[in-house]
Image (cartoon, rainbow, N blue to C red; front, side, top):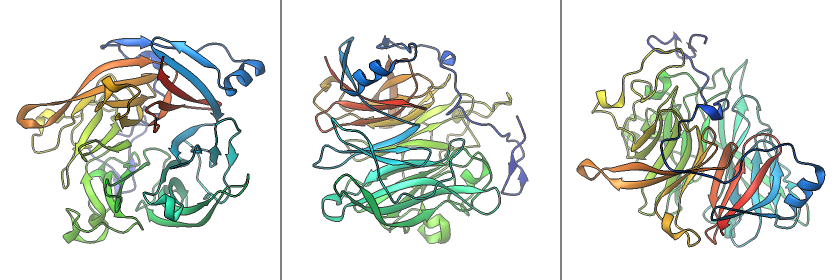
Length: 411
C-alpha cells in the first residue's frame, strides 16, 4: 500500500496508509465465533417478474422472521422515518435523496446538494429534526469538493416540502464543514445523532485516512463533535476554553465512526472501523481520547503492528472490539415490542459479517459497560443501514447497486 502522505506535514512517522475495509472486506474473511442464523443466502440475479413480486411486498418466512422486500435503491447509505407519516427518506451515495411511501415508488427529492461521489464519499446521513412537526427541517451530510484534489464532509439542513408528488428541499444551508479538506475519498464518518433533549446534535467526523489528525486539536477530523442545531460549538463542551475548532470537540482519537447512537439511559456510543482488525463499539464520555492512531486492537494493512488498547490505560478502551472485523455500517439500541428479548441490545448492520450482529451490554470492572457479542444473523449480503420502526420492526438497507430496503418482523 502507498505511504501515508498526510496533509498535516508529509508522511506520518510510524503510521502507514490503509484503504480501510468498509468497501472491500470479503465475506469469507469473517470468522464465525458466535451463534449464527442463516436467513438467506445470496442467490442468482432475479428476473424482472421476481423483482416486481418483491417490490409488491412479498414476504419471506425464515427462522423466526418474516422478511418483506419493500423497494430498491442504488448504493443507499442511510434512512430516516418521517414522524407521523408512512414516508421514509433514503440517501443514495451517488447524490439522490428519495422519498418512499408504502405501496408506491421512490420519488427523487429536489434541491439536494452537489456531492463529490466516489470511493466512500457522496451523500451520507439523513436525520429528521427533533421539532420536524413544527419546522419541517431535515439534516443531511455529504462529501463536498474543495480546491484541487481535496474534499471533506459537510453538514447541512433544509426544510422538506412535501408537495403533491414533487417533494423538495428549501433553503438548504451548510452549517458545518470538516477542516481542513484533504485528498482521498475515505473515512468521512459524518453520522448524525440528536441529543435526547433535542436541543443539540452530535456528529462523527472521520480522520480521512490521514491518521494523525485524530490527535490534533487544530482540526475537527477524527473526532466526535457536539454542536448546536445551527452548527456552532455547543455550550459546555470539554475543550471550549481552547477556542477554535477544539471548541466543537466532544471526544477525540477516532478513525472512521459510521454509527452514533444514544442508549435508553441517555449515554452516547459510537461504532467505528478499525484497520486490519479492531472494529470497535465505544461508550463516549466527554473529553476522553479513544486512542487512534496511537493504539488499536488491529494492525496496519501492510502488517506493521499497532500497540494494543491494553498498553495505554490512560486512553479510553472500547466496550468491545472485533478481530477479524465485522465491517460495521450503522447500529441501533433496540427498544421495541416486536423482539422484546433484544431490548437494550445493540443491533449492528454489518457489511463484512453480511447481516446483523447482536451485542449485549453488561457491567464490567469498575461498573464500566462492556459489550458481549450474542449472535450473528446471516442475511447473505452486506448490510449498510438498520433502523427501528415505531412498531418495533427492523428496517435494513443492503449495500451496493440495486440494493433492497427490507423489513424484518417476528414470524
